[in-house]
Image 1 (cartoon, rainbow, N blue to C red):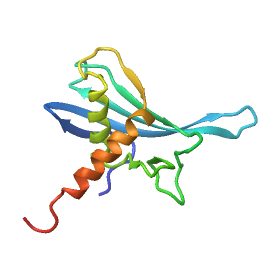
Image 2 (cartoon, rainbow, N blue to C red; image 1 turned 135 degrees about the vertical axis):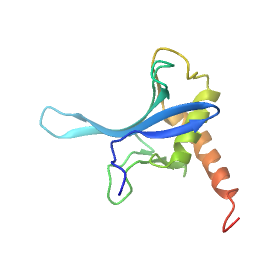
Image 3 (tube, one colour; image 1 turned 30 degrees about the vertical axis):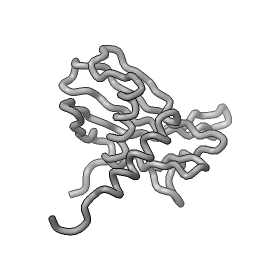
Length: 140
């Protein structure tokens, strides 16, 4: 049975447990159309009450893409320099989490934090590429 797309997923990293969700948002215009596509990746430290959530936000803009689906995949974000991540992949989420911790975010902080995902993208995409290239192939 496939996983429900809105059900939080579990990630364990460096002795911490997180639940994470990914949401796609638009800012509605007065005429009914929408603008400003955003992907918001939220990590919730577990158990509940051990820290505030981390919101990593990718907002579309010049030289950046945040597609809402076809022809590119849901959850894909990237820039024109070739840095990209699929935010549905646990490895991409882990790479962004590691980049946020390196920049000073602490999971035990009681208040939630919001980080512009674009400032993490280059480091996270490079880490994700390294991890993918170093992954063993075939039976072990």
